[in-house]
Amino acid sequence: MPTISPDAPIDLHSHTTASDGSDAPEALVQLASERGLAAIAVTDHDTVGGVAEALDAGATYGVEVIPGVEISAAPPDDVDDRDGVLHILGYLVDPENPALGEALGWMRDMRRERNPEIIKKLNALGVNVTLADAQRYAQGGQVGRPHIAQAVVAAGGAADVQDAFNRYLRTGGPAAVEKAKLPADRSIAVIRAAGGVAVMAHPYQAKLGDGEELEHLVEELVALGLGGIECWYSRHKPEQTARYRELADRFGLVATGGSDYHGTTKPNIALGLTPPVPHAVVDALRARCLV
Ligand code: AMP
Ligand code: ZN
Ligand code: FE
Ligand code: FE
Image 1: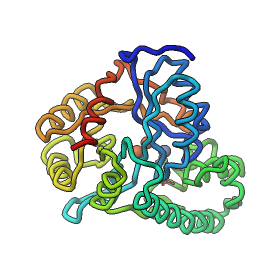
Image 2 (image 1 turned 90 degrees about the vertical axis):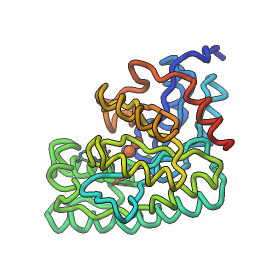
Image 3 (image 1 turned 120 degrees about the vertical axis):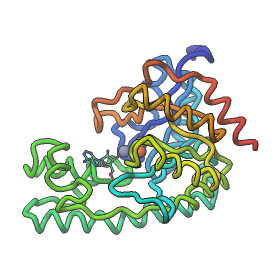
């Protein structure tokens, strides 16, 4: 087993075949080891289905695996969410926790209702795809829009995945069906009930800007038990990272960071960030679990 320095970089945001990443959990951990990462968090959308395999692989490859999840949350009622998304990362959660399992199970049930509706809309638009086509791209994990997009491309309905989103699947697009979201208070509560720390992911995606509106949302989430904010991210500009670190300081949050690696699903995002996220972030998250 290779020895990796605890000072080595980490990546706290990644997806596997359990959701819409292209790498199986073991392959992801192997890649992390090849990239010299000391720790990696597996944060699949609305499932902890990849965590057990990743933990086993972590022992094999000498990579510290942080059990995680990324929940699509509905913001508190007074927040104007426009087209924005609120994703809440849960770190160091017990993947076996029943409350977390129930909440994530509900989200998967909602997805199972939504996918056939998307397919139906595509069919009505003349795109001949089936749910079974999309399932093949999901490699046994839960089916989401990126898999349906791949099926659309294979059916000749779009030039590539991005084109499939632009034409049909983007939010507000002709084949869009809204995804069920777990209320923010419940998202944070189940993460904490499972022993974890709740962290606001990629804050700019809330589309509230980086000023007062965002600050107001963060303040509300803090009141609900938020423990961290994602400051380093593959799409953050240095000014954004600085701003989110300022918010972390102001509200006493752990400043976290990760790439949002998805493998070939999002080929422009590499595993690991430059400059690297320091391992001290993991220690801060662990300390936060104990309060
Ligand atoms: P779902 O969870 O099924 O709604 O799928 C969400 C995923 O679809 C996101 O993680 C993105 O990877 C992808 N996605 C959403 N909107 C777009 C878009 N406009 N262009 C490309 N990919 C998108
Ligand atoms: Zn994704
Ligand atoms: Fe996200
Ligand atoms: Fe993500």
